[in-house]
View 1 (cartoon, rainbow, N blue to C red):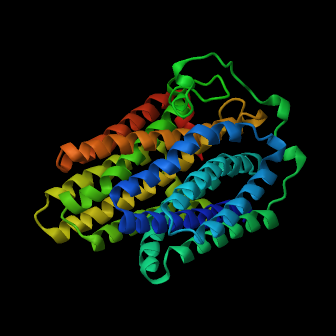
View 2: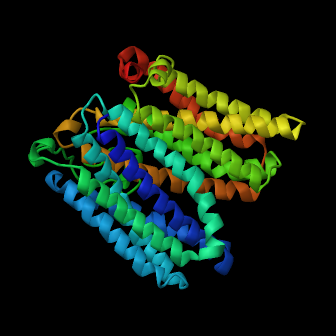
View 3: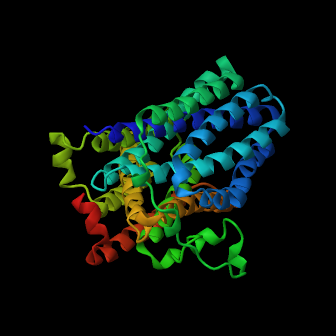
Length: 420
């Protein structure tokens, strides 16, 4: 088995686990000691600086320096986290750490994806990218529960130190196992840029919703970038509504919430294993039925199960349907995320230096969409009672994604994912 199938997903798992531990440690600690308004402030402190700064910095990293820069920033994040662990009781220090560390992580993300683009063989990229995407689902489902259990016992200081150690482990893993040759990296001179005409949408973060900054790619005119935004939009809405839906609409408690998140993570684990071991007999059999069209249909079926969960009188049957729903969603969304990333990697010019620009856009637009969605739903929850209507919003986004994929099938874009 090729080493890159293990190395990149493992590095993503280590970094993701550490990031979630820190997020849980800080958000819960602030909620308990300073209240809800301070917790909202933490989200803004994380997101706003990264939107304003990270994209411009990441795009200026020379392609030949991507590997070294990723290692150095990863080690820098670990050092910053250790220092922050000594000042975690000060709200201002927490905000400062959250802002700076998120800027650094928003630079790390596109650099990491660029390393995959330039060091993984084309035939292996879809599987590796799906495994990396699945690792995010796995850590998001499992690590918050683990962090929530450890926080009362160990305190936020220890969780931050563990995050630092995991960041160092991720950097060490790539440093010891990844050999980057000059021929594997794109030429500096081949990078594409666009003009700097002044317009409203040149505001950092806002521009990502319209154009891939640093290129001439218009987001909504290009199938691959449009698919990514619709996927991120559906995921952001789903993250915003899952807690009120489970607790208020489905009448579940913390045990059901944890079980459903574990089911989501189990779906991600399935995709992770399929990507890491694609030659196994079961993987080959499942590959015949897994394609972009079937996975978008699976997402829609998952939301239909979620709606049915709220309508069942039997709590046991409803909870079982909820577990099935989250497993289907974890599997399908993880697979689609990796597949659409492989489409982004194949955009014209990516092999000649545009890759870092595209991955920077993907990271920045994710921040922008999340900020927009959380703001809208925070306002909505103050004016509207939770109900089954919550499912309509993410279902609409994923339905648009399904329609976009189906319409693009005749042009061959979706067929590439089916053949892989």
